[in-house]
Amino acid sequence: MNDTATGSGTDKPLKFKAGSIIFAQGKTSKYLYIVKKGEVMLVKIKGSTCTAIELCGERDILNEVSVLSSTVNELTAIAKTEVELVLVSQSDVLKIIKNSPVWIPDIFKTLCERLKHTQQMIDEHNLATDKDARLIISKDDEKKYVQNLADYNADF
Image 1 (tube, one colour):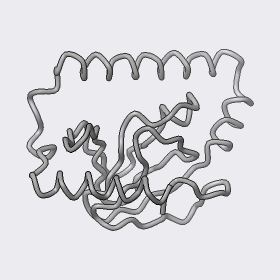
Image 2 (cartoon, helix red, strand yellow):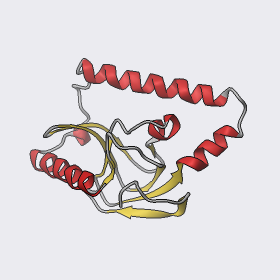
Image 3 (cartoon, helix red, strand yellow):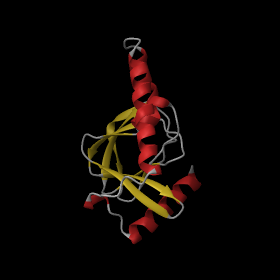
Image 4 (cartoon, helix red, strand yellow):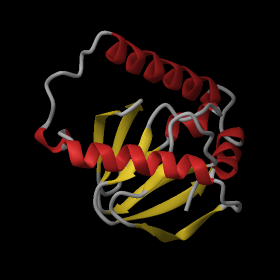
């Protein structure tokens, strides 16, 4: 499944097989994802190089910056194991924000801008050198992830 699905999300978790692309960098996304089960790796893919940024697990939220700021994804999410995700539509998230106090949207906007700026600084200055062992990607997995992203983009 790619993120072009329509609707307002689902209470029933969706399952993704290990290696599946959940959402892709450079693409828009209509959903915020909550990990119910399994692990999702957030990666940055440049050409044939895949850099792991974070490993997300149960109860983690994915794609919040893209959904809250209505911008393209900065990262690609790949199911590291079989995962179950609960989808929350961008329209549902924005409705809740719209019905909150007037200063809440400004807080979210500021936080998103700061997170994006921080990630850019980490990337530009190669500050993510001390890796958690769980974030090391084998050459075989790197090739597989890059190909999966290419296949995902071809279907998009």
